[in-house]
Length: 123
Image: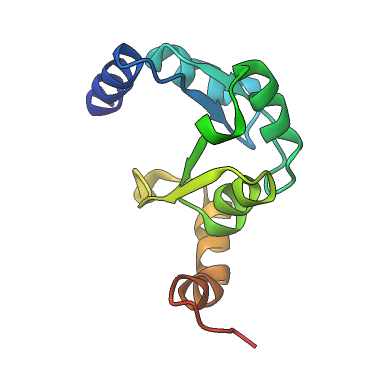
């Protein structure tokens, strides 16, 4: 957690606004956002773009200034792409302690994610 706080402070000192967009509820995401001293949008319903729209309006940023960083192709990255934002796929922070629903979803979509990342038509 210290690494996340350090990275968040460094990014914010460089003028980067961080807004966490989570499918989780407020009680789950708020403490994490507070520890990083950043804004958050909960119950985003990703990959639906509605949560991303709420974050974009809150940020007051131009389209060219936004990047979605996420660890799930079919949630985070797809939501960003639907909004025409730049996207960056990263490895999960802590896959050992993630909810079982996320683990199951990762396993279920792994084949398609690999095909997309390899730019191969999965069908």
